[in-house]
Amino acid sequence: MDTQKYLIEHKKNLLEISEKFGTPTYVYFEEILHENVQKYFDAFNNYGKFKLVYAYKANTNIEICKILKNLNVRADVVSAGELHIAKHIGLNPNDVLFTSNGKTDESIESALNFGCIINIDGFEEIKNIDEISKRLDKKPKISFRINPEVNPHTHDKIATGVKESKFGINIRQAIEAYKLAREKNFEILGIHCHIGSQITEIEPFIEETKKISNIVIDLHEIGINLKFVDLGGGLGIDYLHDGNYNGLTHNLLANGIVPLIENLNKILGYEVELLLEPGRSIVGNAGVLLTKVLSIKRTPYKKFINVDAGFNDLIRPAMYDAYHKILNLNDLSEGDEIFEIVGNLCESGDILGRARRIVAKRNDILAILDTGAYGFSMSSNYNSMPKPAEILIGKDKKVKVLREMENLAALIR
Ligand SMILES: Cc1ncc(COP(=O)(O)O)c(C=O)c1O
Image 1 (tube, rainbow, N blue to C red):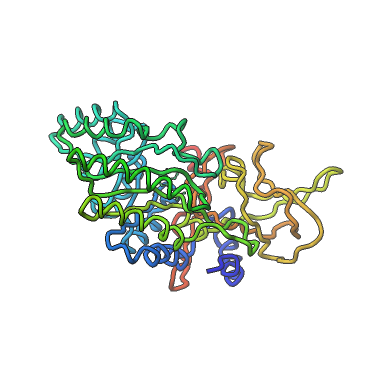
Image 2: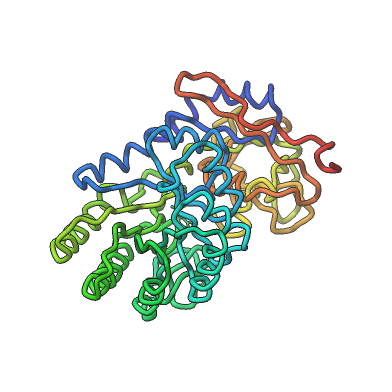
């Protein structure tokens, strides 16, 4: 689905939402969420043991998590908080993978009590989990996060499987880690890696799959037979909407990975479960941030559109130099002026869109596209800004408030 077109079709609805619930406000589209999930299941439907796991960090709004659970999507959680949400909405513990490079005792205890899979990130953690599980009299279900030393060709801050990364056990130490785990009272279930985010080429995924397959084979040879291989998330999305997107598609991803996993299965003599844990490609284009124009400023050097959202609401442009398309829902004409679209925080870096050809006047509503992932979930109260509202447009076209806009009272609670 062309989400820009979809948005324009829903323009009236979005303007009504901004009027009724105020701005800044995130709006999510259930129809697009469903479509995004279906794309994965369609692309991987010839691999019987394919499991889709949603990376909660992308957007942990509880209703979004519930919708995904009802679509048979599992959960990748990274904190006691995300674990709590997965538990609260009734996910089966076996469908939840707890990954983090720094796990508190409390989060390990919660994971053990819940019975989900703990994805171990380092050698010391083997010891920590062993001690806590003995104290609680639990048998941990585990996998290891492996750093495969793969360059995903993406922004440095979202490359997670390069050799200098803080995440995972280095590939050269993988076998040693599994051998150590075998000496403990652990149920060893799988192997995991996540090489990065917003990846638009197949090659890094192929390299990752080959490297991980080799470890699985080496483990098989020493009698450790893994049930699942989790290749992480990372599939990129089209942020530009310029009609020229030639990035990775779900089908290309499946065509690249599945034959390698089938080869692996032949060598092992059994079928592994193949897990992918996307976040961005599930919720990214299913969300839009609505923000109101507060004023227009023309200096001798630059022109600015001041809006009522900032990097407290959407940090991706400031943090990752990310591009998000921005449309004026009140006036879609192009105009001939170029503006910086800036937030109202006391920070020079609070720029939501650079050099945009757009027409705007006070009180117009701008839609910042593709903000369903790493939008609200990375928001903050910086400058004592209340957090935005979150609204869902359901498949039935009904508007549902998922979270009301924070009020000033919340700031002094
Ligand atoms: C461990 C892990 N899995 C999955 C994801 C989801 O990645 P993406 O949103 O790029 O699909 C992330 C994101 O950083 C992650 O750290």
